[in-house]
Image (cartoon, one colour):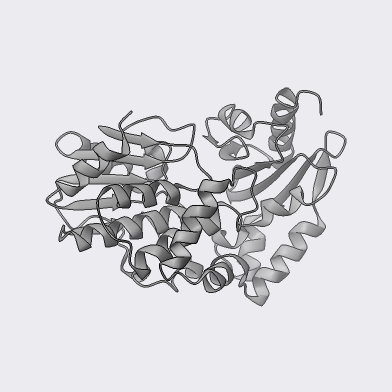
Length: 322
């Protein structure tokens, strides 16, 4: 693996760059990408940010988010993937990144311990948010973070840390956030827009899903299920389910919380959270997923009761002395 100084040298010497964000983008991947975009722009290096699909509306309040493209328009010499543990997480842009890897410089900046080190240059350090890695990289590039950079970085920190409540938040996280705030980022606005603001329809969906929360393993595992029909009925996009998984951990007897989002018939996107006794990265890896010890994800296929049985068994296998 490379040092942050080596990655900084590569980026500073790029003639142009495309920054890739992962499918179903969250605040961390978008915040990192936009912060690097701004830093490279200040270095007079042409660049753009791409994502395979639509950017969730709750992130559009920050400048430049609406300009993210669905495919590269630059024939750049450098491809950068941020907050992406595996190249497959780029979704429809995976073939583009793979093709570029044959003749371009590729960079992988991430914080997931399950990262597969798929680029020519890789920097992976486990932190509460990848925005902390991006902040370190921008400093190593010799770029002074302006208000825009600080806002993008704080967005990543706020969203991936659960507004600084997750178990992997430490002094480094808080110091990085403090620097962003001192640089002009409005933490109250960012926290509200990205984490708390919701439509009436989303509030109704949340209430319906939580009212049907299911418990397993002597109440140590809580599972929320969100069906395609529910999203359609409320006129919501999949990003409306963000944060539902965290509710389960607020129940005192629960050690692992899961949210199953029906992507299509017999396919569920699974988000996992743990209080610490269960390594949910290992649970997710059972099904080809991954992430962090306390927060991970994967895909499961089958009828819902079959999926629940497989998930319950996998958690039980890694539960130790629950």
